[in-house]
Length: 205
Image (cartoon, rainbow, N blue to C red):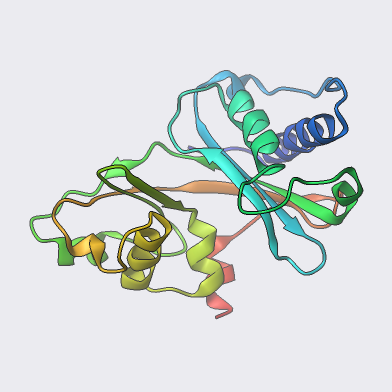
């Protein structure tokens, strides 16, 4: 998986237009759609308050069920009403930055002993999805980078995100998947779009 910077910029512009149209209850304006975005791919859209950088919403689709463009549009609409936060108001549109993570399909990490999972997780490069029974939890690669977690901490946080105990990744009944992401984000609300280098973010901790 590799997207050019201009495609990453298009991804963020698509998300921003979908977000604006949804919050303002207006029709979406035409946005250039790269041909590669017709392929099915998972994606997440993250909204952050500016300039604090605090999370304001993050919704997406880890599995490649939809064409990438649809995953981005639906993720943007979902992020506007992330159940962890109040619904995004029209006044907030110019106070949040839009970030798009384009995902590789999640791959099950298969190990003989659960404790060996740490050897197969690269914080800052991998994202994690955890599943046990009805419980599900996902953390994007940039989360581990931002907090400076090691592999064991990342696994524990993913389990807690799923509503499980922190050490649930040591339970053979827990399935752990990893994936990678290319991340593009506005530097300021409606501003220039840049590719996020996750390893560099982790080095700052």
